[in-house]
Length: 346
Ligand code: SF4
Image (cartoon, rainbow, N blue to C red):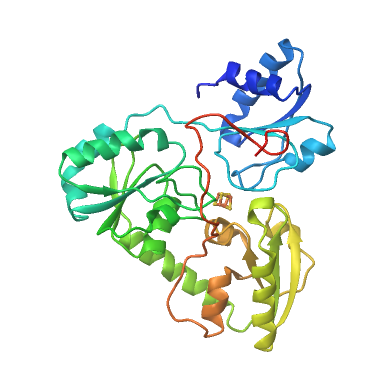
């Protein structure tokens, strides 16, 4: 269970003069969404729960909120990403209630193998502990660099599954704090530096080099599977923060220049099942990079990223992770609830 800042949410809704709100939540925060609904309804605010799957701030339900006549959207579980929002949106990040110092203390000898100058990164769940972690490491003699990151992230040192801009600093190695494989794998591939992932829940430390090599081998296997493909469906996302139409058109152009048939396909939630009936030999996903990497086993056709198309066509030789980049980050988020979009003046 996460701590819900009920009063702060209510104060923000009152400041917006909102009478009806849509609450969007990832799967892990559905109960919290219900709790907020009950609380707000007691305060005479009309609530609609958004039932679609949500994986990130890249996919705010602001269009749906507008369509449903809501004055505001409450987006739970993720921090703000710079996007043009159609209704005022209250971002309520979910910070994990777990200490990080014990796991760092336990793995100090492994951390020393990264070198003296280390980049420190984490996900939004643990970002509130980053200063504490930095202080601890500095007291142990490390020079700690925390990159500012670009406009896709809210805070220095934050990484997303599609953006590792804050990890790209002049360090000997990268220390990632958090759980799961995808983020530290991305860090290792995007920085090409020794990357150590420390899980604050289990206290385990994992070096990502071998994992990254294994992933690259799997991705080359997908490229090899697509080698004889003559037609490609190039999937572009209708999710605001995943929409990369220019990049998708570039990929279509490259494929056509190389004698392939290529068509753009627009999708919101991308899955192979929805594409049944199309005759394409292979697909390219120009959206969230997690889709082709996490989900390829569920696809009966090869599924590539834009960078992998360049490998396929012989336009590059080295494996590059498909990152979504932002612009220079010219905003600083509070470490908590924030409001963006029209009327919020942001
Ligand atoms: S594009 Fe994918 S990795 Fe990036 S924020 Fe969205 S869901 Fe996360």
